[in-house]
Image (cartoon, rainbow, N blue to C red):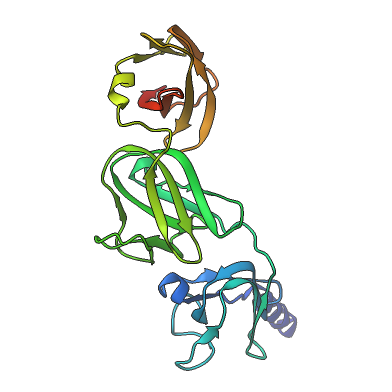
Length: 285
């Protein structure tokens, strides 16, 4: 009976033990590990992952006490930037990077004071250049990051040279509240924040013509357009930058039902497409 219980104990240990193995390197400033997955505790994989040229290393337990691949002080050299299926065999100590002809969305987001440090997912058509169009960003700090985690993020020094730094302790500083078109290149790490082409230097004039009030009893947003030569386009965003409604306002009182909205802070973006003027209002449901 005792031998049987010992056998069961050994089996349980062998099935429950699983190494935590990941990789890090020049691409993320040697920060925290990018976790890999396994089904047999021997072969660990990460599929369709973009890596620039440079050194990487695999390790156990997000530290340097356990196993390391390659062993010693050597790193594995990624010769060419690209998308890879990555594999590590901990029995044979074999590292394999299989180059892919095309990649998938690498889940890049913008995060900062403007969205209370919650992720605003960026858009891409080639999985290299990521963009946000006409996004309202308040003065403050922002960063780019990958997979909604801090293992791979990019900031910039106070000099803000337009090239992001992997796992930088510095943020990117936005000096002025405005509506921006944002771009970030995963390959070159070049980034831009430019005032949106639909924004205007004369926003104050339109701002004076738009008056809003949230009616809590009716659950409506009342928007009074004092004067408008034609319809005004509007968009409503969450504080995280997600578009939830758009349409048009006309001169006079416009009432929008907010019954379907969750409680919280929202951003109303109103634009005169003819004059290119724009104003931003905030309201709380």
